[in-house]
Length: 195
Image (tube, rainbow, N blue to C red; front, side, top):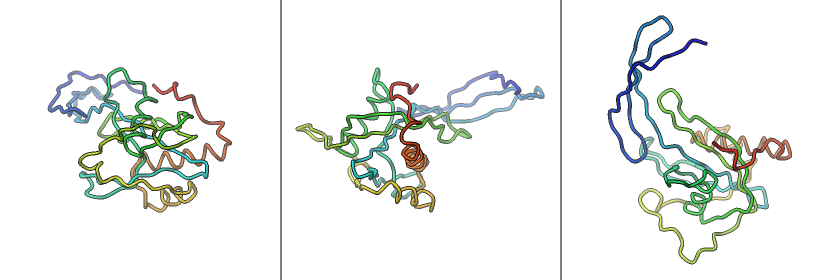
């Protein structure tokens, strides 16, 4: 495989979630070309399964596509020093008011490598129950309108394959969970192995 040397790196814009950059990259033939992309803080997502084999999915409005999408409870890796599995547990509590006793790593996915370095780590949460906090998380903005739905895993697979679920992390998480279940959970990795 050829090497692609980055000759320069210029940040164009930054916010708390991502920055837009331009790299001047030397191609295999020697030509140097500009490539723009988004540098993302990263994210975690949770496939939470209850004792009946149902998956917790949320409905959330996404401004970029101007639609309410089926999604996993998920969010940013934006708390300094927080482990990835702790971030996943935080997001499960914040978006679904749920906690889990058992955690495994299900998949690691570059969501849109053609334009971003974003990587989401998807965790499988089992032995799920309600959060036991006296003060529930206060949701704001798009999250204020989140709806939690429990869907049979097989039905969620059908939704993913039919195009009803289009969020990439949700499609991959649902399909990966179904495959892991079919393999009697032998393909799962320890939650702490997430990088």
